[in-house]
Image 1 (cartoon, rainbow, N blue to C red):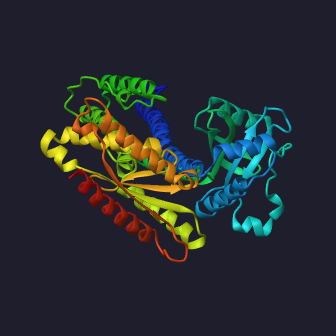
Image 2: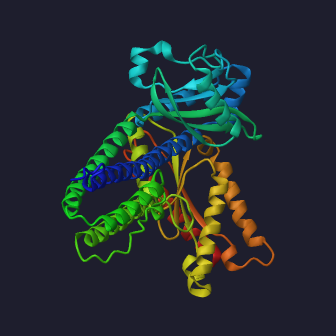
Image 3: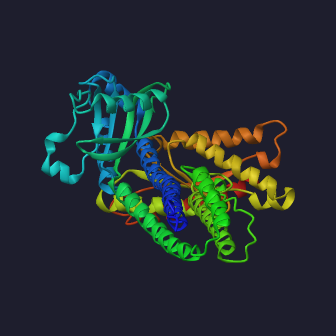
Length: 464
């Protein structure tokens, strides 16, 4: 009896093992890419919110003058306290402002300010950075080069850095003075060791499940291949090999297509061919659903925190912001105020000219408020109601900004040929936080709402 050099059963077994390995690799790459992108996007959203919040509390001109003169101002000291409060209230590794200088081995960065937690003040008070102090060899040339590129881009940038202080994901926001000149970089470092651990566990689980299913499939396939039906098996093996080659390192689910041979044997080989084809379709559908689900989750996250019409924060976003502000009130006495703004005559515009014009009226009103109070977070909390939280520069210059708001509304009324939905009328109520009297953010909110209502009554009376 002739010895078979390559038994069909072993050849099929080798092909199945190869298929499983390729599928594990393809699924792992696809899963790693989508899952890691989702995780990093979550961190980027978190860092962006922290940077925007911190930047809103910075008097850019005052800080720029401190950097240029090397002299610490009262605003600089207030900024130190403000940044310290942010670091204490949020899960941050580092929060600081620097000026990237070069990618030299030493003195490639200049410190401006760095937040310190209460524990750091107690354990290492000497760690408080000095204005315009050089950093020595704290930053390697490679790390300094990342900072320098992000700083020179003039835009919000993200990069990962591994150093003696840990594995961090850094967000860098260039700071500009009122003349538009970039003078420093506001940075936030977040420890992302948890992302790496989560990714490893997630990939290992998926590989384990894929391997388990693959092993089970291989055993069944070997049993079905007991009969000597060589030609159909060769065709099927060729199809599987082609599929493995085409799907290797592909991140497009549409590429995971098995071109099954047209078999009509009426036995297990035909059934196996159909099973392999169905498996590839299910796998492609699963990957597509997974990517679609992650895309939908990202979309829902945005919808949950942004108003669909005006694109400012919605009621959910304001509630989250209110919780953070309440935590600061419980531990310190921040200077802030709340503006309640109600768009007058929205119902009349909707009833008379249609909801499309009413939407235009709301968007124009929101744009007016955002342009004037551009350093303050703006939220749409009702159909025609907006909340503005005043802090820092906007808080200190609130009377001027309120005057500009009244002037801007007046200009819309005086504009020749302006349509009713272009003539903006907003009733505004302002309430300032009173330490010792106000226990919650809601106390300030209620007073602002009452002031707004009184102003709305006055404006309606004046109109009559």
